Length: 216
Image (cartoon, rainbow, N blue to C red; front, side, top):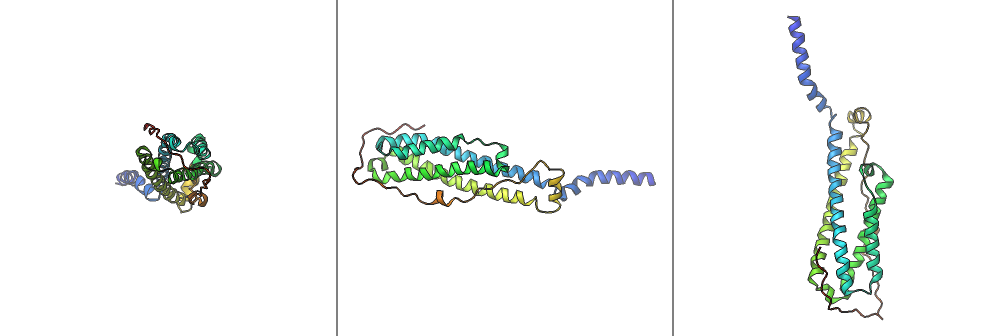
């Protein structure tokens, strides 16, 4: 009888062990880590979408406002800098590397704001259908970037909290010792502020009959 009880006890332990382990939060860290990484992938996806729109946007503006060379050059250079910053899995846990990536993207946001303000001085550009379509796509992408950054921050905040809660903090230092807290995006007041652009009164806006650049 005692042998049977021992066997039943062992079977019960084998059945209940996974449930008990799951209930104590051992899976929380990897689960929330994967969720944060998925949100990070969405952030990168939206930034790439913006980068893909910029060359055609610059070419369209150039056809109507070629004299705004400094702004066009600034946008092109900022895009190059933003796309050249390399990111990998270590970026999320490296504050310096993450800050470099975020700063490059924020700088691009700022110069794009300057580029979009140019339209007020060029009626032909402002009414160009290709420009309007690109403008709409860019605005939509900027909104999606904002949402994806917010969702990423929320996922990371939830994930990082696991390193401070018991017993999950114990699992973080043992079973999941390879997992590290992730870095969040910080609000950039300079990038979010509307840029001011000064146009010289001695240089009248130019009109152009050039056709719109083909959509990519």
